[in-house]
Structures are given as C-alpha cells and as structure tokens.
Length: 309
Image (tube, rainbow, N blue to C red; front, side, top):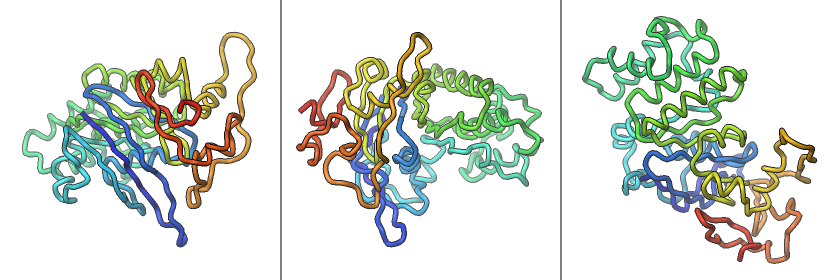
C-alpha cells in the first residue's frame, strides 16, 4: 500500500517561497492506478518528483510518504537510492523523449542503471526482458536515441523505469508531444502493465487519457488536492466547482454544448490567498470560502469545499 499524508513541498525563488504542494494527502492500494489531473503549474509534476525525492531546487518541508507502512522520507539518501528509487518506485519523467543521453546507446544507458544499483544477475537477459515488455525489438539496444522514432524513445524510457520491476511507477505526461497513433500505443502499454499488477500514478492534464487507465482520480488546483475519489464517482458526480469546470471544458461528441471557460487566473503560489484558492474564480463562492475548507467525506474519497460542510 502507498499513501501520502500532509505533504508540503516548497521552492525558493527570488527570495520568495513558492508553495508548490500544500498539505496533499491520498492513498493507493496495491495494483491500483491513480490519475492526478489539473492545469499547468498546479503542482502535479512536483508531487511526482517528491515521491522519488528528486525535487530539484525545491525542498520537502514536512509530511509522510508511506510505502508498505514505511516512511521513505525518513530514510537516508543512500538507503533510499539503494532500496527504493527505481527498485520499488520509478518515474517516467515529463519530456521523457529528451531524457535519453544522445552520446550513449540504448543498451549502455540500461547497463548504467543496473551497474548503479549493483545488479549481479544476467544483465543482458534483464535488459531484453524489459525491452520486450514494452513491445520493442532487441535491435534497438544497439541504436542511439536519434535513430529511434518518438514512440520508440518513449517506450524505451518506460522500459528503463520497469527494468528493476518496481512496485509503483509514476508517469508524468507520458503521451505529451506524441501523435495520436503513438499515444494509443503508449496507453495500450500502460493498460497492459496495469493488468500485470503494477501500481501506477499517471500525471496529466488530459481527462480523456486519465479515464482510460485510472481507478482513482485526484483533482489538483494551486498546490492542493480539492477532490479525490474513484474515477466513476469523480467523473459522473463531481463535487468541487473546479472539478465541474474541468469536465465542462471537454467537448462532447454527441449533441451540442457550450464549453466552460474560467474567468481570471490561478493564484500566485508565492503569495497564495487565504482560504479556498479557487475563491476568486468560483461562481459559487461564499464569504466563508475565505477560510480554509475542511475535507468532507464522499462515497469513495473526499472533497475540500464549503458547499459540502
């Protein structure tokens, strides 16, 4: 089981403190998949990086990240790198196609991961197994990144994340900048991995992609999770006004409907407003919304909104 409790992550920028992730909490059972949805700069990627303790330029201030009951934030860097990172938790980074080193072959980059983690078994067999799991031929191992198509590079990066057979994989916008056919291939691969028992955290702004894979959904706005629950409940019966706005912004295939657009801009996370951070853009805002809303339980999760006090 995986869980996050009251996680706070901050950056310091030009003398200001940016509250990128602010008291985020959720849980995920084994073999479940979670979709984290929200507009750009809401803290989704920072949350993913915090899970593998790789927040460059930022700092995890407080909170817990529990893996099988153990708080991995209390581990030393050496212990975390040796026992957790890539072995139990791995990540496919945003812009993954550009994360491959252009001067090394694909095989060399796989071998570097195994060498770093002191893998003593048959390395070539391990690498071939990972490559085959994402539908790539073994011939790609002798190629350099520039010799692969966008979809092949994306799948190679996913194979690297799967190399040491982690329990949990975090995929940050894994289909961004890919054409629709390659997107379909990557989504099919993620579905296959999920069926094989891997837990998955999928970070995206695309509600359609989330609906294809996720069991649970966390709606994130301005550093906070405003609604959390099963995919079916959140999509069919959204509670938070922001969640409703997101869903109403998606074009409908059947029938005619006006697309929803939000007035204003997201708040400055270096100087966040008191109370609900969606207050200035919410059509249902009340005076009490200037105070922090309490979490109200729903059938499958919670919503942070005064409407459900």
